[in-house]
Amino acid sequence: MSTNRRDFLKIAGMAAFGSVALSGCQAPKSDIGEDPFAGLTSMTGDIKPIVKEDYENRHNRARSLMKKEGIDALYLSGSNNLYYFSGINMGGGDRLFAMFLPQEGAPAFVCANFEVPRAKERIKYGAEDVRPWHEHEDPFRLFADIMRERGIDKSVIGVDEKLPYWYYNSLTQRAPDAKYTPADPVTHEMRLIKEPKEIALTRRAVEVTMEAYRAAFKTVHPGMTQAELRENIALAFKALGAAGRGGGSFGPASGNPHGSTIEYPLEEGTVILVDGGCRVDNYPSDISRTITCGGKASDKVKKVFEIERQAQLAGIKAIRPGAKCEDADLAARQVIEDAGYGPGYKYFAHRFGHGFGLDGHDGPLHLVTGNKTPMRVGMMFTAEPGIYIPGEFGIRLEEDVLVTEDGCEVFAREYMSTAIDKPFG
Image (cartoon, rainbow, N blue to C red; front, side, top):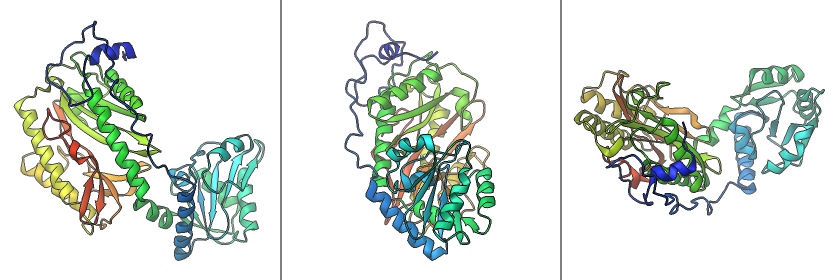
């Protein structure tokens, strides 16, 4: 059963906003009433959000790429590609909402008539031409009309990679003379290399996540449920001015990378693997930490933790401009295998990291063996090796990193875990 806020205060006790006290993990006292969030204040009030001028710049950069790639317009709907160019992400369901971004001229949107006022409030740039359709009408005919008006009904249209098939099928039937091609040469290229504001927003999201985890980890006690820890993490994010989440897998559940449906009891020394993050102006963090209840750990847990930590450091060291995306995975995997937790995916069951951005898992580049794509300045990835021992426990540490001119930046590096009882440095 999840805790309410009053129970949360009892659980957290007198924990101040500071270093995490993981030792002496005990049941809460009923007479403790100080709010553990009293020292937490919003960390998002001074951010610099993505604004109209930023979207305008994105349109101009997209037009340059479209010209280079021979694409006359982009058709975007139902994904964060739409959000990236407009600041809105309606659509993807049975009521079409989509954006038409031409190489020349202003963008146009197609929107259900009753949603037009709300859409115009949320579109950050280019809302002058919003074409409404009523429930009995075919919205895809509006796109055919736009293409004819612009004189590109027989031209090359770049289609959003995440477009639902029935959207694509309807579009091609209404405008059959156009040539349709993936929008990837524009959308992937632009989103792979992060803008300074995107980097700053991600960095702040990571900082908020670290502080939320620090506050919530103080509430850990024997008998706590995974749902209670999840709710406490969400409450901590809220106190810090962000919408966030985090889930904890206890004991043998942590031996699966994404947990288990089985609820294992939390006792002194039980391994807890936490994964989650928040969004700041829609830009996310993705952070994992592994601790134990009470800070106590078996010798085996300590040994595996140190192997995992060294594997993460080796992988991060391999992240630099010009290096292959597989290099980080190979470096971390070598450390884990040399320590006896191999071969291959036996214990390190997944890739070292994934591309990171608006989608969280921001494709198409990931840090995985076999991906020989060179890393470039401005790319962002997660760095998250793991060692998972089925039926016992799992250890994962995860940071968010940026490829820089001289290597990589680990966001909030000072918070990197250094020991099982020191999750924040």
